[in-house]
Image (cartoon, rainbow, N blue to C red; front, side, top):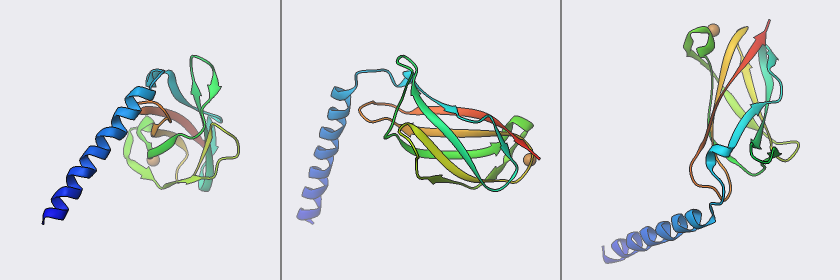
Length: 135
Ligand SMILES: [Cu+2]
C-alpha cells in the first residue's frame, strides 16, 4: 500500500517535470503549423494512399517528427458524417510528409481530420482537409 502511494506521487512529480519542460521549449505558436494535402483528389477504391505535408506557415518549411494521434476520414463534405472509413498510417518517404492508407469506399467529397503533436511545441495541430474521390 505504502509503496503504491509513493510511486503514484513520484509519477505525478515526473509528469509535472515533463510538462514544465514542454512549456519551456515552446518557441513558436502551435497555430503556425498546418497540414496540407499533397494531392487534392484520390481515386475511390481500396488501399488508396493519401499524402499530407505538415508545414510551418511562418517559414514555409516542412515539419518532420510530428506525432499524429487522431485521424478520421469521413464524408462530411457530402452530408454523410456518419460514413467513415478505416485509415492507417504508412511510413513516410520524406521529412514532413505523412502518408495514410484508406479504403475510399465511395466517390465524392471526403474530409480528413488530423490531430497531431509537434516536437517542442505545446498544444495540438488540428486540421480538416477536404479531398475529392473520383470514381
Ligand atoms: Cu458516402
